[in-house]
Length: 292
Image 1 (cartoon, rainbow, N blue to C red):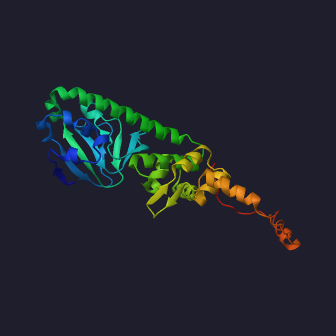
Image 2: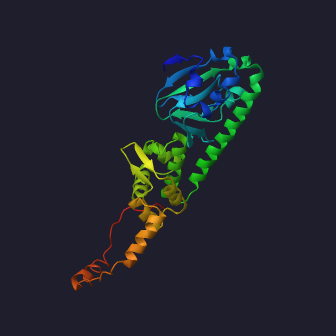
Image 3: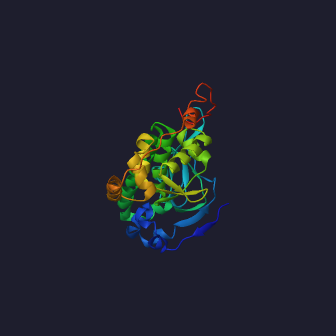
């Protein structure tokens, strides 16, 4: 069983996630007695925090951690449809007393704040503020799921991966992104782990990300957005990223190159020219280098 840690009345006011949290935004309107019902607990990787079709008896807000969002289709298989992170709200099914429409599985260890439904009866006049914030959370959740659906329709795995990394950076609120496993990314993008590995390598080569270690990478948002559109970057944009210069610096470098004396190109020898055509008629086993 996960550890359960009761919170104090000052927990919300001390929390760094308060401006984005459903409970934190309306905490000032809540009566003091309400805070006594709020608890915070740890959850483990792989723990199911919400199961589709089941009724929930408490409002949950993710404080730390990453979740995989799943939807069970008519064939009974749970398929990944998105991801959720810090300040994600698992509240609407409980408040409306309806079966949950989605499943949430923990991808990393984390912490969750929980408020029993019985505590909502003590809100008093603050119930209107809570309902408004809950409606806003529903709007944000719909937008996040729509973004993941849009990414799935980008042509090519490279473009899809670029879009997914931008979404992960937004969820984690950092340009230093903690990557899910290749299995999770493959499930989200409906592809294979090998294709995920090749797409990440391609994005790194194109200057869209910088790998820090096996699980972390630093993203370059503008480069990824460009790659998400066409899968490749323009030569000028790629050159700026690799040199770490802006457009003005690039223009200066171009002007300097134009003013420099030209270097005569030496013609290739006949031996070098013959290498170009030596195996033209010989089939070459290339393997799977591109995604269809």
